[in-house]
Amino acid sequence: MTAGEVTVDLSGKAIANIEGILITTEAAPDPELGTTVQLKAADVLNYTDADDTLYVLGQSGDKVQLLDPANWVDGNLVATGIQATGSFTNADGQTFNIYQTKSGGILNVDADVEVFV
View 1 (tube, rainbow, N blue to C red):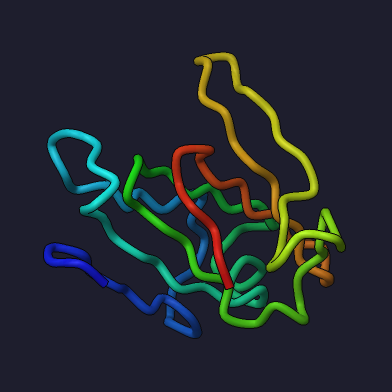
View 2: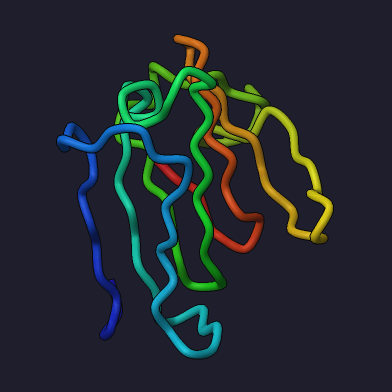
């Protein structure tokens, strides 16, 4: 971790019925400065409503750490770590990478945000 980075463990918290997490706090994107949010696959199901879809918005320097890799669908078995199963661009031009839990949850992560295990 470099100076100015923050890690926030959101796994297993008493959070319910949310659609998204905004992790950006910097005025301008900086790959050397950001926030890391830690999540488990079960959090996607527990934190969302019936559609089981959670969005993470951020910018360059922000990260999402998937704490339990065995509970995520790996979109590329050749590459190291858990890879996205797809991506999409919404009507506003925002691109998201799609991460799926083995229990049916969907985590849509802003393409500017790094995801790792």
